[in-house]
Amino acid sequence: MINTFDILETIKMIQDECLDIRTTTMGISLLDCADSNIDKACDKVYDKICKKAEKLVSTGEDIEKQYGIPIINKRVSVTPIAILAGISGGDPVKYALALEKAAQTIGVNFIGGYSALVQKGFSAGDLELINSIPEALARTEHLCSSVNIGSTKAGINMDAVKIMGQKVKEAAELTKDNDCIAAGKLVVFCNAPEDNPFMAGAFHGLSEPDCVINVGVSGPGVVRAAISKYPDYSVNEVAELIKKTAFKITRMGQLVGVEASQRLGVPFGIVDLSLAPTPAVGDSVAHILEEIGLEQCGGAGTTACLAMLNDAVKKGGVMASSSVGGLSGAFIPVSEDAGMIDAARSGSLTIEKLEAMTAVCSVGLDMIVIPGDTTAEVISGIIADEAAIGMVNGKTTAVRVIPAIGKEIGDELEFGGLLGSGPVMNVNTKSPVKFINRGGKIPAPLHSLKN
Image 1 (cartoon, rainbow, N blue to C red):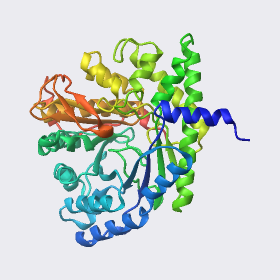
Image 2: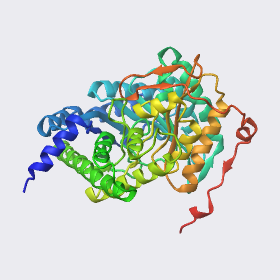
Image 3: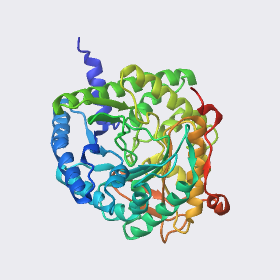
């Protein structure tokens, strides 16, 4: 029986509390597009994406109209392009341009998968693709790139860590006249999931079906509004409230995923439970933490509040869907979260505190603007630190930092849209150059041996 109260509650969440479906992401395997001739491979890539995702955007719009549920982004993720580049040889940027052309043709917001998985070392095509990332991102608008440099099973590839520090810096420099945006479309992972619908880290894993629909939900504003109604609740009562709220949010994601799957004729993959914030007022993870009882995000108690929030979101979400995956937690990107931006501006939130917070949430040091003169070795050190948290704790962590070329602490970059804006944050510049230049790998931890 339809519950009128539930309907009205959902309408209020959408209208007043920024509830939305952050993304429907179609994952497409490109393995059957591989060809020893790179130009033929690129043609196959373009044709398959356009065929599979031809109705992705229009279907999302139809679901929005029918159910009144905002779907903010429609996206595509593809097989890591380094695999195709290893077969075809040639300039991988050709693949980037083919992906960009396909994204424009089908009308999606982003296309992800200009990626390489090098946690255990470099195979054919990996280095070529990684070296091409700055140019590929500078020459495209919708393309996103990711590189997985570590895992709990494999350890951390420190040779890849060194290279990625350089590539992040190069990407920023190539787009310094456009707020260094290329670095904002590049993420470096440890334990990257194969079914993540969120950019910039989405790629279509090798164990995935030929084509699949994954959904990413949002709802920080809904959680904050729920907590604000009960100022006298104890912490465990707050956790229970968050669980119930996450359940409602996830059910909406499940509905959209199943509906899109049926209409598009492709399997439904997962719902990603992540609370994905935006720069919009009332849609902030930081503000949830402050509603729980912090004076400002970044102060003492922040990590504990975030750990409780993240756990409660997962517990509520898994009851609402049998297909939970991706990252599934609370995102803490600085430039995409109004509360995080304010905390960073005031000095309450530092990179060191953010690093501590990433030990208990999804996904890592995300959308953080750093001084433009930060060296590649320091960036590599940041990547290594974050990867170590992921490796030892058996969780996904990532780094997406944007060196603001020509700017200093206190200046800001303005990206617009969901990427928001970010103040340049202070970075410890003591050099790890000797450590980074040693190369090799950090061995996997003992608890990786679970067989």
